[in-house]
Image (cartoon, rainbow, N blue to C red; front, side, top):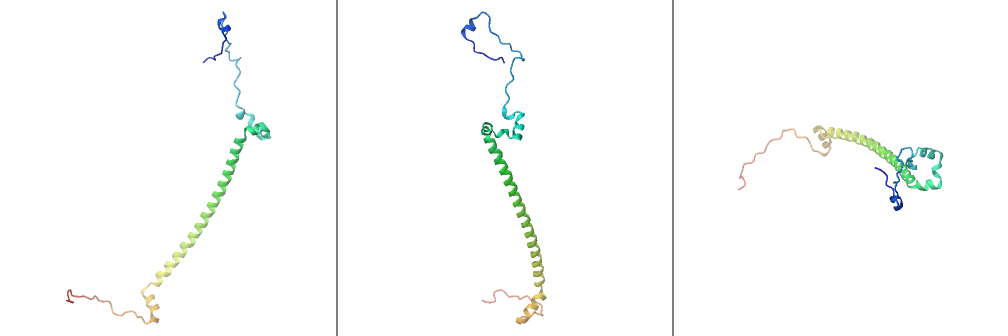
Amino acid sequence: MSKNKYITEEEANAEEPVVENASPETEQPEKKNKLFSGRTFVQIMNGEFLTRDTFLRNLPFTFFVGFLLVFVIAWGYYGETVTKHEVQLEKELGELNSEFYTLTTDYNTQRGRRQIALRLEPTGVKESTSSPKKIRVRKYVFE
């Protein structure tokens, strides 16, 4: 599209219309954004970006980068804390599992028929020598 230009009445009434030379050589290139110029990295490295006007213009970005740095450091500490806690819980779980197996083994050895008879011997309770028998009751005996 061609560029539009405001023309006064005198120029519009003139016999020869005013035409701009639209050659690419005469057009000036658009100014690049200073924030993304190739010089930005150099300004950061030599500290030139800390001058008053540039620093104030970039202050929100500086705060944003600072916030991101603090967030990354905090996230690292949080991850380290969670990992330490996880290792501690795994050790505790291993100890509880070994204690469970030890207690289960002790219980199984002490609940045997012979072990119970030996423990009840001092109280006077003895193991029956006769086998158990079924007691049969006739129906309607107690009428």
